[in-house]
Length: 293
Image (cartoon, rainbow, N blue to C red; front, side):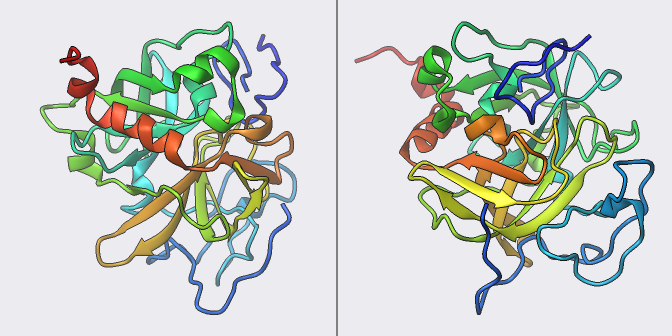
């Protein structure tokens, strides 16, 4: 039976649950991730009572309301994390980010490392666009994990970010197959975003669109319904470009309270200098491994 570890409510790790006030849209803002099909709810199977995904809905989903997104090229960059294979239970969410090596996935640190007195999870796989047991874009093995060294010492929620290096599959790199979103560093904390993640009790993703706000100087928060355990690591995407089909990730579900103690409010570490340095480590592993001159 799973054990509960306080403060990790949105990440359900195998054998261990590691686990806003929001304003309306301002003039000139547009929802990120808008593309054909995003405006309609898809039919969903059993879920929580009253879950919006349990009915078909047309028109723009109300902000802060979760819905089952249709399959799209951009949402295919978001996937579920499993241990060993995609035949077990998924426990967190990740997404492909643009990098020189075209091989990085972004998630929450608490999804892949236990923090203070903890260790790395091993034998992880990433399944983009996972739905109902199917892996249309394949199952990708994690080759390496990067977390801030200070996370391993302190479990500091401001450092709850991780990058995963993904092994090539059939001779191809994951970003060459799916594309990747840009990592946004030092962005305005109040922005419209789209979140897509995988609740552990569902075999398909949920999406939600709303506006973020600052939560102190080092965290973001957002009000979005039904983002429960398993959605840790979900990307917060803004500034979607319909021509390139890419957006900018300014947060991930994690940080304060492991991403949030309730299903309707989520948090993210603010992406500042510490996240930039961690990305540089992951994006340039040869430089990290090179001996000092």
